Image (cartoon, rainbow, N blue to C red; front, top):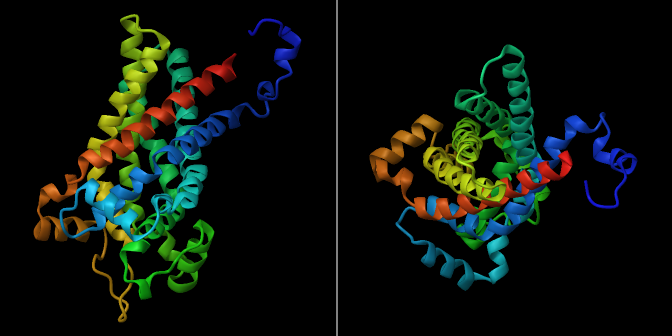
Length: 306
C-alpha cells in the first residue's frame, strides 16, 4: 500500500467495489489493447497491404508507396476502426481470458489439482473464439479502410471513419457482409490467443520457477508469446484479409467463395509458402502489440490488486 494511504481510503477506491470487480479484467483488456494499437497501427497498415498484393512487395516498398501517394499520416488510415476493434475484440478477449483463468485456477485449487498449460490453452482458445465472433464487424471495417487506397481512385469508398465504413458496408452489401471472413477470423483469433495468452501465462510460470524478477517475467514472456502468436495465426490472418477486402463484382460474384476456397486457390496459384510471406512484417506488427498490451495489462492487474 502506498505510504500515507490509510486502509479505509484504499478500500474506498472505485475498483474495490465488489459490483465492479467482474468488469475489471475487461477494462484492463480494452485499455491495454488500445494503447498497443495506437503504437503499431503503421506496421499493421503495411502488413495488410503486403497480404493483399498479388506480387512480392517488401515492407520498405509498401511504406514508400503509401507515403508517396499521400502523407505520412496516411499510415494511420483505419486507426478509428483499429481502436473500435480493440474496444470490442481486445476488451472481450483479454477480459474473458483473465476471467476464465481465474475460474480455472479456483476450480483447480478446489479440486486439489494443478493449473497447467492445458488449462491456459483452454482459456486462450475459448476467449479468442468468443471475442472474434463479437468483434468481426470492426475487423471488416479495419481491413476495408486499410485496403481502400489500393483501389483505383474512382472506385474508392473514401471511408471517413469506422462508423462510416460500417454504415456504408451495411447499406451497400447488407448486414451479413459485416461477418464476411468470420470463420478464418475466429480460427485466427483462437490460434493467436493460443500462441499469445497460453504461452505468455506458461512462460511467466516457468520463469518464476527459476527466480526471474516480475519485470523480467513479463517482458520475456511477452516476447515468447509474440513469436508463437505470429507462427500459429499468420495463415488464418492472411485468408481473413483476402476474404474481408474483396468486393462483389457487377454480377454479384466474388473471387473467393469462403475460407477453404481461399486456402486452396492461393495454394494452387501462389504456392503454400504464400501464407507465410510477410512473416517478418507480421511478427514486427504482432510482437510489439503483444509485448505492449501484455505489459500494460500485467501492470494494470498488479495495480488493481494493490
